[in-house]
Image (cartoon, rainbow, N blue to C red):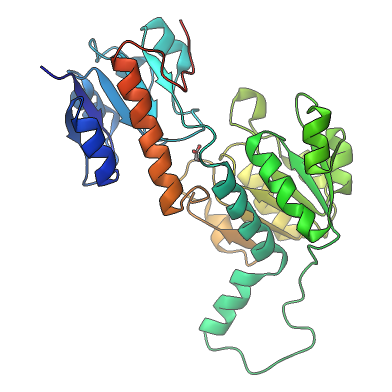
Length: 321
Ligand code: GLV
């Protein structure tokens, strides 16, 4: 008999076909988020699960799943998974690093350009029928070329963002818990600076760190106050890395000029303050969402699941035990 696995959300047909070669698959192609109780019931007789970043995998859930051996996230970030609880229950957890770096880096640039050049604000104005002709001072934005880009987190995605900036002839500065090696700094043309220097110098601050207790509100009131009034903040990493209430206050008061955001605290709920502001570009957590990349992410998660349940070490194991 094939092991039973659960796919918690809609995935591509190719992924289901691949999984079906190895497993008896139950899949939620209707794509509605399962409440914790429903997830527990669905997972109670399964050996493996393909999950998404919206599924919370914690000790309460795991205590309902005696047969579970592997939980494979379709995401590089895994703050939705309690790794210690998985390890205690001897359940392997995996993520999908590498395959989404370029796509997420591209989207970060979409946010940078749209935010600096006020694209969504200008489009709404045009769509609402208010445009009555060219004006010299209409939607004056900020130049991206030759500006200083400040990157928090020069990991895989941060590096892509930095490398893409070369075409815009920007100065790149970065801050990370560890300084990158000289080859990386050279390829990114990035200089290591401390946090306050970055905040004070950057015209564009872009955040590329995973969410954890250590990065909770990495950008809060104090940090926003240190940024230049003409600067913009970009977040395509995780909600919670930025203090949304403090950011809204800074955007309202003009402490910073604008923000481009793909992620939010408590998403999909948005802090209502964002919707009242014109100087923020908002996206629904789609930075990795190109067709090719989302397929690669789901396939990589599926390959992790196949390896884990075959008794092998999955390629992206997060909690070796
Ligand atoms: C997306 O946010 C991911 O972590 O892959």
